[in-house]
Length: 324
Ligand code: AMP
Ligand code: TRP
Image (cartoon, rainbow, N blue to C red):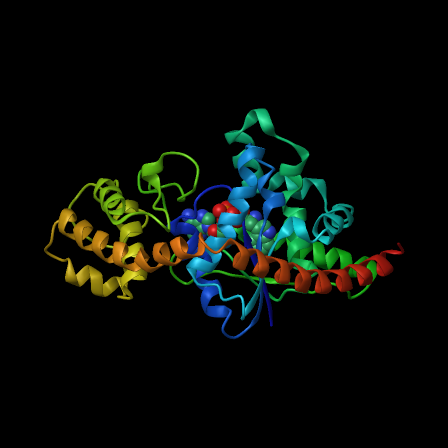
């Protein structure tokens, strides 16, 4: 089966990116035919500094490798290096209803966040994402919950396209992790963890142990003192339990028992230790890769060639079907 996913080079990877999306990539690359992409064309739909973009793109590629993507087992490349992504986005734009785009939660959120920068690219963002997925005749898209709506729209685009032009495109499905599909902010546990905003609200994948500990200890918890999983009544503690469970491999029920008579601070201390240990190998690998620029560029060049071969072949079929 073909697998495709990507992350925007808009800042440091955080625990939400890893637990929601990338952790699935690392396991699935062992058994399926995977394509992973640094989606730089998506990154320019929100305010950014062109002076930093190139470095951010390259560093995200390094982060992919540091997090465990194996270039022998998957195709790894940069979106803008395969021009068919932008080309297919244009074609798909002609079969995507405007109303659907305006309805997308991410478009509404980002428009509110940056009212001075509501460009057409931001509205068309899901069409480019559909192009990314469909160029590779993808079966599975491993993502966090916030991207599920975009995959649903992609499926609708496929159905409309195939109805008009013949059975050309494959209908993909989203793959969400059973636990951790929405990691919440440490400071506002009713919002998802994201790269923007208060630095205390997220934990970077490559953060130092002291800083991880400080952020966990300062994380907002709930009134009461029970360490119980209940996302509605206890969003803060439930989020920390989820993170603890994923970092330690212990089921949430076991953690609830282990900390039954303990205080929030005992629980947080223990979590901080597990988490720092869990993330340690990532930083080590990243530091090493930062010194191997030629090696990383070579991986990206080869990835781009392989991706382009697949993309060009799908593009040809699509153009023929559309009468171009
Ligand atoms: P982004 O950083 O928005 O490009 O997101 C990259 C991937 O990480 C996507 O698959 C998102 O669904 C996933 N992701 C981002 N934030 C979170 C979060 N707080 N919890 C779970 N998954 C997330
Ligand atoms: N829109 C996704 C996000 O913000 C990133 C992305 C772009 C993506 N193209 C994709 C994810 C294709 C999966 C498949 O997280």
